[in-house]
Length: 206
Image (tube, rainbow, N blue to C red; front, side):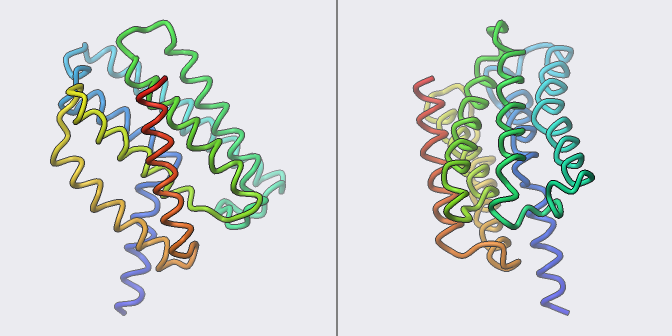
């Protein structure tokens, strides 16, 4: 019974922090958290959320589902590294499309910075994946934590409690990936570290 409960909890955490959902979490935190974007109109916030969700979640998910229906990938878990390549390219194109749509909107500069960081993280995993099954979940979560950390340091946002919460969630996610047997400790650690460092560099220098 305890083993079954832990498996269900691990699957729930893995779904809540799925790489496709991380950009949505990021934009919600930027728009509704204690940041300089909090004061913009609700109409603008709804527009930004819609653009991000459409380009980084809905369209990539539909495309990956189409790949599955055409039997170009065997399932949606993408456990085999070779089956991740095309979906990752689709995700990158979604991020680029999203950044392009927001390119002329000055008030969206923090969202664009995160998107550049996300593109860097996916490129990082895209290069490594053919040779090693690095954790995509932990890479995405590391990138999100980097954004929260830098916003706190820069003064663009105040995420002290949120940052602590996501640190705990990142630890829980790493444990979940290990418990489910999808990755080993090195793959989880490398994913988080790579995501954090690459996202930090992209946010600071783009």
